[in-house]
Image (tube, rainbow, N blue to C red; front, top):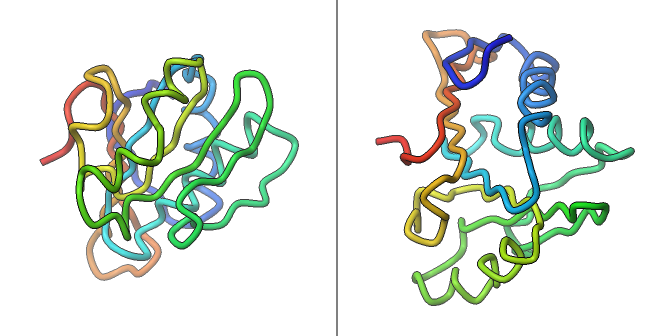
Length: 147
């Protein structure tokens, strides 16, 4: 599979498999901004990355905790801007420090404060397709947030 690009997923299993294939591209200091409607599959994509890079796939949305740590080398963090009320509030997550220390940071709802992500951030946009509740279009790019 060639990444970046756009891919169709017909199930959570396919979404996780794509995320696992994408995960091998991640290097220390990389950030991944995930965007999409509520329930589109952002956390499922994160679950696939974590399963590929760690021995666990125990992942939940950090909406109320704001930041989960999955340890390892490089350290892997999962953040969520959903409840952040301002850019200052989101900046308090300390993502710049985590990235400068070589962590990989996955950020759901990153489009709310794209200025907090580095210019070379990866972007994952997940959209429902057609009338099929399971079908998604997953677009993977680097450097520019999706519009």
